[in-house]
Image (cartoon, rainbow, N blue to C red; front, top):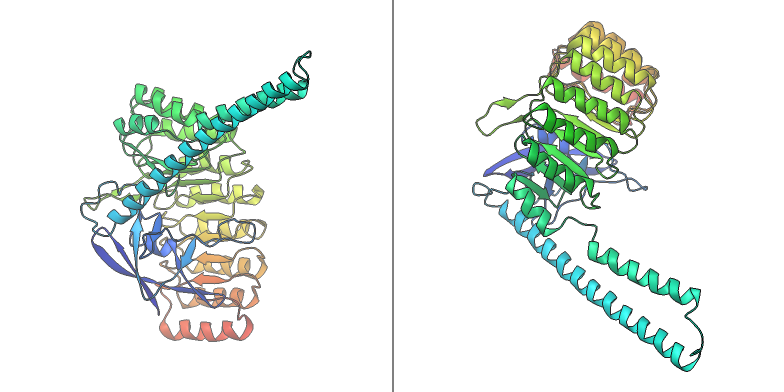
Length: 447
C-alpha cells in the first residue's frame, strides 16, 4: 500500500493512495476519515491542488487530487482563520490574502481604464459633431454607444463581487468568506437581525459566492431560519449547501421546502457530522422522518447531483425512503449514507433501487450493519447495474457466505472501477480467493 502524507493543525498522517487508470490519487473521502473538515489540499508552494475534472470541466467522483508522494500536503478548512496551532496552515491564509489584494488592484486599474476610454469616446463624439455634422443631433448609433459605455462603466463600479464592506459586516457575525472554496462559512446560529444582513449579502447574487456552510444550527429561532430559506428559494448563485451541525426539526422542514422550490440551482447538499475541537461529534442525528423529507426533495430536484447524509440515524426506514427516491431520480450521481445504522432491510431496498436507477455513479455505505442477507441482493444488483463506478461497502458485517454472493456480482459487473470491502467479517482465505476469482473475469475493477 502506498501512502500520501497530509499535515493538518499540527498533525501529520498517512492517507492511502488509490491507483485509477495507472495514475495515483488521494481521495477526499479517505482524507475525511482522518481529517473531516479539510476541504482543500495545498501543495508545498501553498497553491490549492485542483480536483480532477472530466473533459467537460465537471469534477470527477469520488473527489480526488493527484498524489505527490515525495511531498507533505497541507490541509485547509473554512475554520482555519485561527491557525495558531497549524504552523503550515498559515501559508494558506497568506496566499488567499495575496490573491485578494491582487484582485482589488486589478479591479482598480480596470475601473480607471474604463473611465479613460469613456473620456476618449465623448471627445471623439464632440469633435465629429463640430467638424462633420455641426447642424445635426447625435445619431441613434452614437447615443447607443454612449449609453453602452456608461452601462459598462457602471457594471465595473458594481464589481459583482463581494466587497470589503460586506466582508467587514460578515466578520461582525463570525461569518467568514473563504475565497479558496468561494464559500460563506457560518460558525454559529444567527439572530434575526444578523440573518437579515447575511441574507442581504446572498441576495446580491455575487458571482464569487457559490457555497454556504453552517457549522451549527442556521438561526437561533424559526423566524431567523425562515429568512435564509426564503432567500434560498430564489437564489440562483448558491449551488453548494453544507450543514455540519445539528438541525432542529423546524430547520429541516424549512430547508426541504426551500429546496423543493429551488430545484434548478443547488447541486450539492451535505448534512453530516464533523468532530468538534473537544473530540465529540456535533451530529445532525437525522432520523427516518428527516430522511423521508430529504428523499422527497431529490426525488424531484432537477439539478441536485451530490447528497451526503453520512453519520446520521436514518436506519432501515430512512434508507427505504431514499431507495424510493432513487427509483425515480435521474440526476443524483453521488450518495453518501455511511454510518447510518442501516442493516439488511435498508441495504436490500437500496440494492433493488439500483437495478433501476441509471444516474448514480458513487455510493458509500461503509460503517453500517449490513450482513449476508443483503449481500445477496447487492451481488445481484452488481450483476445488473451499468452505471455505478465507486462503491464503499467496507466496515460492515458481511461474512464468507455474503462474500461469495458479492464475488459473483463483481465477476459479472462491467462498469465498477473501485470497490471497498475491507473490515468486514470475511476470512483472509476467502477474501484472497475472491480477489483471484474476480481478476479472472473482471480486470477493470480495483479493490
